[in-house]
Amino acid sequence: MSPLPAYVILLLICIALMHLYFLWLEMFAWTSRGPKVFRNFPKNLFEPTRSMAANQGLYNGFLAAGLLWAIWIEDPTWSRNVALFFSGCVAVAGIYGALSVSRKIFWIQGFPALVLIVLLLTASMG
Image (cartoon, rainbow, N blue to C red):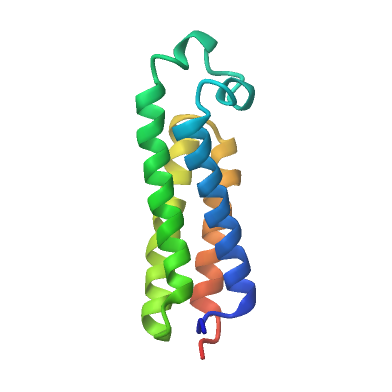
């Protein structure tokens, strides 16, 4: 049983599922679904960037795995610390993406992770 509150677990799972979707999109559907999702990216660059996108997808999978791992840790301190570390990684990636690619990335990736961090820091653990 996870020591994290249910509302924290729910947000954690939502963020992890989002990153599993990114994994699927970037590793397995980059040239098929990718052009429909990333409309501003030139269509002729999807095939040449396939391996780069797959590498990004793998990293998103690691983020999702870390977030989900935090749920299964029974020790309250470790559970919170692992969740904080991986949500911090997601927040940094979202902020960097917003500054370097599109502000929309902050709202999709960075903001939910920052909310999760606040919830983790203020949650009563038990």
